[in-house]
Structure formats: C-alpha cells, structure tokens
Length: 168
Image 1 (cartoon, rainbow, N blue to C red):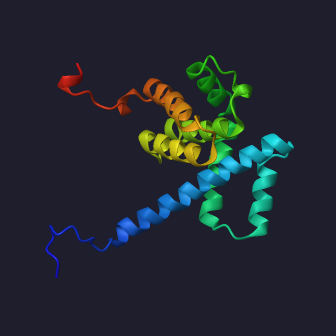
Image 2: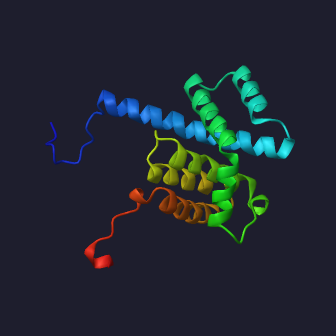
Image 3: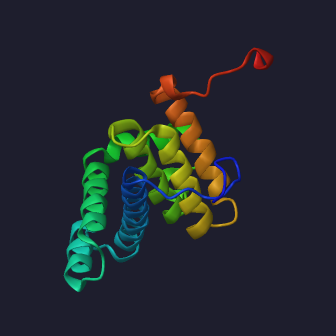
C-alpha cells in the first residue's frame, strides 16, 4: 500500500466527485450558451428559440440545459449593463466590432462574476479564458482575460489578488 506522501492519487470523496460533475456540467453549459449566443447573432433567431430546439433534440443533460438557460436569461436581463462594461473596459473596440465568440464569452463571464453569486469571479475568468482559447481566435484568450480582469477589478475589488510586500 502506498504511503500518503507517495504521490499516488487518492480516491475522490463523494463531495469532490459531485463538485467535479457540477463544474463539468457548468463548463458544458457555458459552451452551450456561447454557441447559442453565436447562432442567435448569425441567424437572427432568438436565444430562447435555439435553446428550446436544443432541448427538444435531446442529448444534452437537463442540468446543463438548465444552467445554460439561467445564463442566457441573466445575459438578456443585464444586456445593457454587460455591453456597457465591455465597452468601458475595451474602449478601442466597439462592441459590434468584437468577434462574436469573444463577445459571447465576455457576456457569460461578466454575468457570472458580477451579477450571479454562485461562481467566484476568478473562476468565471478562468473558465472564460479557457473557452476563448478553445473556440476563439489566436488572441481571444488574452483579450478576454484583459477585459475581464479590468471589469472584475472595478466591480468586485474584494476579489483582487492580494499583493505581497515584495509587490509594493
């Protein structure tokens, strides 16, 4: 039997397995919400219509669809605030000039980090950067990270990384 310090992986507890599953479902929901926002922009269909069609097609777990729906509803309710925050943080880029995927990822992350209390702001940023890296263009991850960093630092200053004495 390996000793606790041997580096052998320990079996995950039920709580950590549940958390991993929830995080995986939320990650998939963010991707789905981004894809729905993208499709809505390109086709002119409403996000609600696209979500209903996706639900009816099956194959996506209800928990994933429910969280994607929560994100889309929140984005719709806070749309003017989200656009304003993005334009304020990226004044050199008019909102409609930002790539659709980048805009969608930013809206999801800002909603989660600034207006929904269920996701820590830094986790929302990390998720957004990961999704931007996977689905966006060459500079998307860096752009998304920079914009979100500015917005979260301003809206949620309590979540700024603590500076060490060496940083002063």
